[in-house]
Length: 382
Ligand code: MG
Image 1 (cartoon, rainbow, N blue to C red):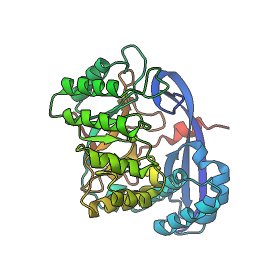
Image 2 (cartoon, helix red, strand yellow):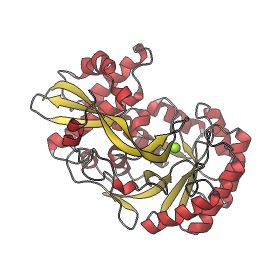
Image 3 (cartoon, rainbow, N blue to C red):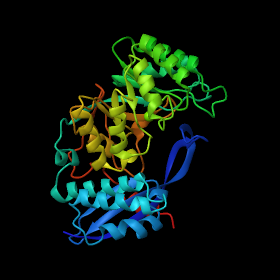
């Protein structure tokens, strides 16, 4: 089997999620946004697909780098293709990013699963077929009855527990919220949620990412009193030393890195530096399923858990792939949005959750997404 084409479709769909000036999502009126889908096509008609932001799969990148590496190659040589694409990054003047690698690599995994008639988590070698989900909230806001006060977080947490979630992660207030960031308000929201859900629900926080060391220490010590399960990205992840300092000074597990560049190589450095107690990886953060598996296995070899960043089928597949992963991150959630409504371009939810808080893996071949090709083709951007 040989790859004969790489196609990109860009289409519009309706969402109620809006981005603020820091890139964080909040609820609002329905509006149209663009989404991309990359498809890898083989000479026997086999195809593999992955969704991605249109800018990460724009024509220049596909023609200059992706097609030159992929066309004529065996789609099952994922390691070779990933390495060859990764080696283009240095000479690409910063244009070929890990985000593009991730979309290509994930489409290759999807293609392999579809061609072999296997769900990708089975192709990898699954550890489980259902994963407990934590409800991951949107960042705080200034919307009345939304996530504007500690009491709002407490009320929303009660709803999430009633829905079945056994864990909740708060994204607290960050600029452009007028009075943020504020460690004391973060701790008030965390205390309100602990009060609302009792001692048996796992709680985590993903706070403002640019606190000072002393602010992050104050936050962490407050969370220890509330029995939180981890603290995530309270400092700029470009400073590994700051995380090593924080991890040495706190009892609560420090989780990371999520947004730091450097794929699995940077994660090895974090472990060596003692900068985290729980490792982090995500399909779109490190360049695909392939380097995510390396990150997960690296953590396993050091007796560490590795938690997966972000929702969607590829990250769900990862969450089912190894013993040292505790959760699937489901969201982002907000009192004004119904997450289970899903997306117009999928015929069904990629991450259906039962009343006990377990998200079930699809037994469909490939990544398990039930793609609505008719909707995509009817809504193409000219
Ligand atoms: Mg995060």
